[in-house]
Length: 332
Image (cartoon, rainbow, N blue to C red; front, side, top):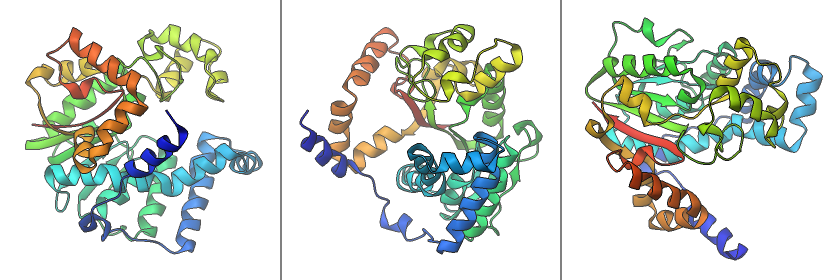
């Protein structure tokens, strides 16, 4: 395809938030952004890159480091505000909704949900991320909302019920047993008529792994073989992280991200053909921008062909479980 045509389509396919949602966005002063940057440096990057401040500074001066910092500071928030929040709001309305967010990370998604009036409880196992999230929520003036930054397990929430439970880019970082337990528990914690939302989760069935290794057929491999094959990835430093095959290293490897498929949902909730699919992100974006559907076919033609092929093999499985990234909303 002609490069000029591609650039034109990319501009036309850019997503913006509806006015009713955008008017609730808050813009902190530069000093607030600096606070978030400092919190990311002290907590997040010292945990993910190095405990050595000099090495962190060196990384943040690289092209990848600058991109990573911008993504963590503003990029993820913008993505959630313009794509995920409008989708969820159109499905069930965020204002006044009680939401359990699993995998809240450094709080970008938490801010985006809270500023729309949701009552939020956030869970994440990474204490370093909580430190950044607390700073971010304060900077955006969301410190008085009903948000619990708690790294405890979902099983501790025995006396609460929620209108919506969101697994935001986290199922892929759990072990199989953790996934099954969390999904089963989440379904119990949902009010009748409530919504279980899965966002930005790599599909095990997709032939290309764009999340972790950026290798074809990677998520089809058993864990031990994938562990050994990780060295063939072009993604640095992932390709040098795992050398000695031990149980501890295997768990660390799984935490980096392994694909999820409809099988976990069928085992933990009920047969997927009996699930009620309230909406999908793809359906929502296609309605908002008619060009989106055509652009998807142009930019991801191989994936579209593969989805069609998989559907022909297992036609009873809902379409939302066939996309390279799982983004759907189930209603209880």
